[in-house]
Length: 205
Image (cartoon, rainbow, N blue to C red; front, side):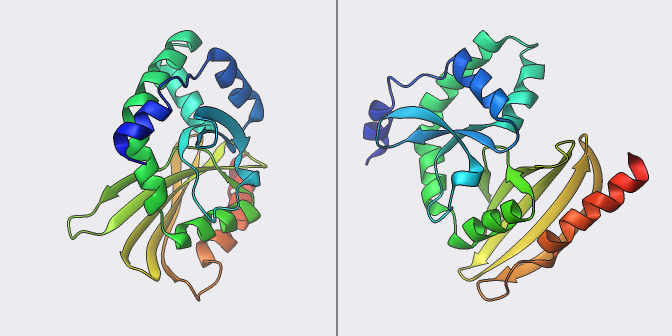
């Protein structure tokens, strides 16, 4: 589907205050995505995503709580602005979803299996040497005050440079850089994260 056709297909789609309230109730891991079957925006939880093919994520639970502060709690204004942003960016976000490496999808599954839910719309870009970078924001499903930022950099098809940064109420705690490949299994940083959360909370709770 061309960019123009895609914009036209979703032209009538709206994000309402009711949608945002439902997203808020869903909690960490809730996302609003573009449903290509209906041409509308729909709500789901990332626990239901297989990540075999990345959905076109419009908004996440973490985005909502960040933006409500910027909009001073004005849900109506936020819904209107988000609808306009989605209309302007739908082709870019769709292209990013299509270009998401399968290895990133596997790591999102690994993160979920270890108690961390994708909680933000992914960010994409290019490094100075032409690599593809993606940033994902996650929240601990058991301790939502603990959040993570996973940065992936792909320069080769079958491997990623990754960096998992941990935060407590937005304050930086620690970071694990690592290289992972299609054959290396679950990265150490992902396996270690639940224990790091427990140790951190033992000291700071």
